[in-house]
Length: 266
Image: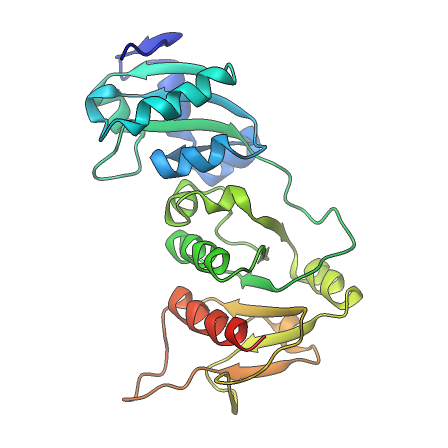
């Protein structure tokens, strides 16, 4: 199949390519308000969302399977600019060891709190540092029916390409905010949410705990735990039962266990 593209880039010194490389830096992504989504599944969800897409970059030499062309057709139908990259040029901007030849540049949305109402279970990722953990939390939450995911006092931002990768694109299909812990707390309290802190030193086990309909599960970073603002609230402190002297669990794994326990008991 012939793919209609607007431009071809082969030189590693191309200014457009250099701009895409610069988006590895969080500061540049925030200044430019743009980020990258790499991979078939990620772009399949992106093109189905209401995000504005600037450009799709492709390298047919790296394609796996035939589904790529139907996805490219979806981009063409929306009149999105498509640029062909050489294998070397694509590998320079790729975030993967084995890229599949699809990466898009999209415009970020303002994720600060804009609404004063919220409904349904909420996952709050408090000062999570590792992009893989945050992305995996998004993917797990979505699979368990949690549509609201907030970053509290963010360290790793939602639009980090590795967050998008770990979420396999479900970042584009959830309701999300990234704001200060004080603003998120105010929103939750205004809407009468039950606050649940997952803490390894809590006295009560999360097993068989039945949450209220509108609950917010707070997961802290592995290094620092949950920040002080959350600890000052009237809240439930729960822990995961741990055996064999294991006193800490990876943040995304702990989040998955906790979400499963709470969602099965709703």
